[in-house]
Image 1 (cartoon, one colour):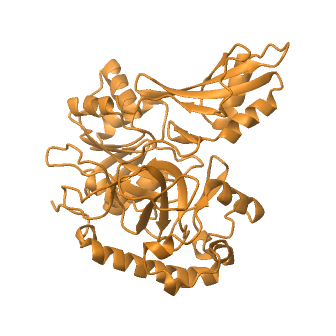
Image 2 (cartoon, helix red, strand yellow):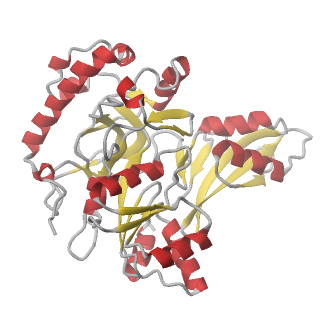
Length: 417
């Protein structure tokens, strides 16, 4: 069994940097002519001048609100998707709303490399529980696994008893999905007396893999690694492990990605080690996002991974630079909470609290009633589910009890436990 997906993973860092920027210049030389909206947003740059990170840092950062505005004015992709990517392909809709086109060719989100690092090989059977509905989550790892030669069962999330029955019959060697849902499946299998011992490895995404949860899986003989991915960019970084399956520190940046850490709210790069917003430039010819601000916080780790892969490492997900918060693999935006309040005049103020219930995400919308009003929690819960596509509870808070600090979404999960 080879140690690496390909020899690009072990290139000398200076050679990778040179070749990556050569690729960026070639990409923009083609894309700026084909995509006037991209050219205008970037300020009509000369691709030949983008020789290094200092030159790249002079370009503007494209953040989610900017992208949403561009898409609203020029639907569906804001003029940023190459027309060739839209023929005989797929389009996805993520919360925001934000439209994303599927890239070109096999493994368009560059997931195969992360799956390989997690131990998946040709012939493995993957039980994929990421969602295939509207958002690209399920397809991201599905396409990567099939490009790697795996057989994929597109299970999607939910309907746990059926998941257990399918896995017990198919006997998959691996799982893909959110970090906590595998535990739900395993515990339901225990309850039903079904054997899911065939599952030996997993690649998870869409939420935090808490240390206690990783320990639980290790106790069941399952090596679980995580990758950091977004619907817009695909797999940005991924974990690797030692021979015993223990994860190495940090996440390795994917090939064909340029990662910067900038001071939140600006485009100014920060020194290695400082926490800031993760900004990504993707060499994706179908959807060339240049200096795309993810809104996620991370930091660059010094040195290279003990596994021998030489690309930059990041600390992984360290929170949000804004209040957009990922819950069960889906982002919830402050504007969605505002939409709920607008739909219910009986609400004076609201705050969404995201916490943990065991090993799963849970969200509670705390609402202060308007003067003289008596909000119906069941009705508001239905609106919450309709707007966010996630289930949560509603609690009535006393008037004036919610802090007047501008916070609409409060993430109270402990990421160290």
